[in-house]
Length: 347
Image (cartoon, rainbow, N blue to C red):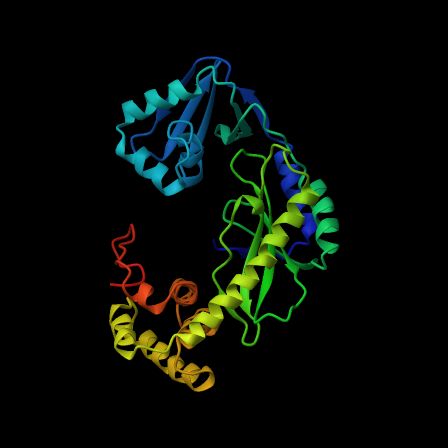
């Protein structure tokens, strides 16, 4: 997810969110609900008890509403189901799911009427972002993890704060970002742990988020326990990465396989030339093994500013894949076509 750097202090950024959410009102869906969707599928209007609420049908709102029809599907799968239904069928299913459901529609007044902010369950517990941060910071500081005074925002308006993580004697260290959730029924509080190769500051893909790394608005876990469990899982993961590095070092390069991998890379020729040049550098430093291949790809993903950002992210993903699995598995993985009709990483 792309983050936008903010010049604001963390206190000001969170206070702005708190002030904004102070304007949000709640409407329980305890009566019949009617739904209207624009022909373009870009707008939705939900009406109940003589009041109408409108919203932009972005991926977030589609997933949030669609989850009441198709349980336990991720955003991509929900959107596919959503767009595969005709408008009349979709409206009928939404009306059935929302009418007399007890869910709470959260909205705010705007110049063009009431705008949907989110949909929450009857058990939803609002959380003040400053209160959450106060407890979280105290808990993380006991582990030596402290705020860095670096603030950014997600595309959804969530505030993100960076924390410094103590160094270790591992080859790979941790980075930590805290995402402060919104009271909209969709956004949770999250601890995002990243991995960086300390000797060269190469970034690997983030540690895959688990239930330990999300604090949901149900207060089923104390914030301090949430922070401690998430940090412990992240530190434990480093031991696994060390084993993966040792295994990758032991896998000598199969040059025929490496040629096949390079042929399949869906990259511009200039970028491929940079990849090949970096392979030579890493082979000279750490030997002709798969750890060097991983290092070359993640180095370019982290440091090569001449490569477009999206491509750099893909290189980091490939390098992490070689480390976590093997060059054989990555090079033989099936081609994936993106929604825009282009190859993802490999042809």
